[in-house]
Image (cartoon, rainbow, N blue to C red):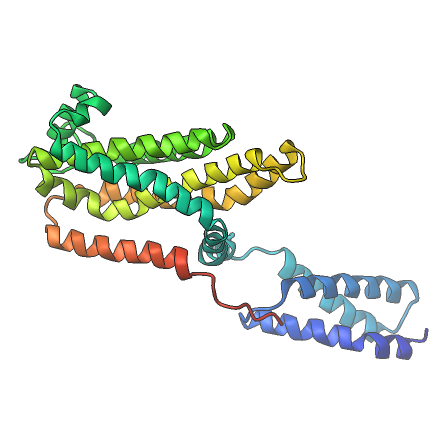
Length: 322
């Protein structure tokens, strides 16, 4: 093949790669798979042209294209922030919607016991004592007692950063239990969801019954959007894991469990992200007694709309591949 024939045959490939590189330099989206395929072909063309000692101008163009494509493919100017943004905006909401049956089941296992326990704790004086120890209830009462400078913590607790670490440890621990218990054919995750729903409902109902609701609800309103949703998603991931064990189909149980784990991982990411945000809000915003309850309720409503909008609508836009 002469240099003229070589250039005529592969010029559309080179022009296409050059156009994609130009769009990338302008910050516009490009088809990454197509760019990588063209980059590999250009490298092959360059090696062939060098081995055949083709003209210098031809080698120079191929070397320039290969170098620019290499820098674009392998450099990470945003330190992974772009990838993280795609994960939050597109991949995680889509994964949650794809596993909506497990998510709805987890929601029922958590929310229904919570509402029932809340109602019974308000109606029966000793219902909360059947689920929790008297010392735990007294501690909760002291945390939300009138006169505390900051709600939701003991008066001798450390500063906000210490509580932030405490809440992260507590929230992530709940998430791990909800998810990890799924290896017990999903029964473990179901139990953890039901138990946490009962315990949370019992505490809320008890504090409301003893007249501390005016301190309780402004504290829990805002971070509840992130924390409760995170617990449900962690439980849904555990149920998805159990489903792979209970219903392997034509796969072996081990292969089905591996596939279920891959499907559950995005739910775990979404749950732990929400639990992390909940810890930050619970440490720095929720305890502030100087913020008016009306302001907290307004922000709480916005947070619930934000979380629901993220899970229900984000990632639905169509991708325009070039």
